[in-house]
Length: 331
Image (cartoon, rainbow, N blue to C red; front, side, top):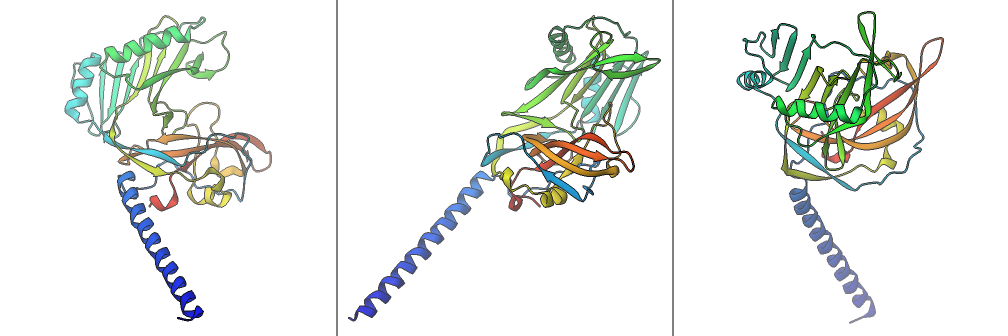
């Protein structure tokens, strides 16, 4: 056998070995993906209030260096909606005995107390207009305990919810209207938010300032308002998905897949169509409940500033939701 033939046989053997290794790796990857990515390809987040990113100028200047994950869990939603029968049972536990009005949003009105439950989104809104504003200093920690007790007494579970006293909102009265305030000397109500944690990450909604539950009280611990999102996650039936490397998030991808969100109340309301430029300065991981999908999806919450205005330029805070899963797993 010539040296040439020997070399040819070695090359062919090596090529066959590489093919076999590649095939084995391919099938192994498919098996692993099938096991880990339990739900397969999933829908992108759907937010009805989303605003397309029209600014021509978007830049990224991350000032933080957080841990860069390679994989993350996707949670299935077992239940988000609530039947009218269940809503009536919930209302009864809160203390409403009359028949409600409405179909998709059912409403109870008894005296100065009002309860609304959205059957499709599972959102509950309670208000007691007989509770008077009381000026004075607040103990946020003490009122958070009262708020948690109130929710549990009304049959609204606080399991998995954490009171966020650090970002509790203060309110003051101007005329007949309530306004959020940073002035700690003259508030009349405090709004305690409760965040739902999935692992190490917080659950967000289409309004980035909204929490999974919130209770507004006066300094005496009397509850003026409460909001609660009814949801059940299937923490056993979860899938492990690859995460997009944050270093690969480019201005072009932000324009294509980013969802511009902004507060729907408070002092930061602005017309997003007037934004001329955006600088993304920081990011962190969270989960999004778009209140439509079968999943609670991981997202990058991108935060920064925007230049807004036609003649006079102002700087406003910007929040963008960006899907955290690798592109190949989203449709």
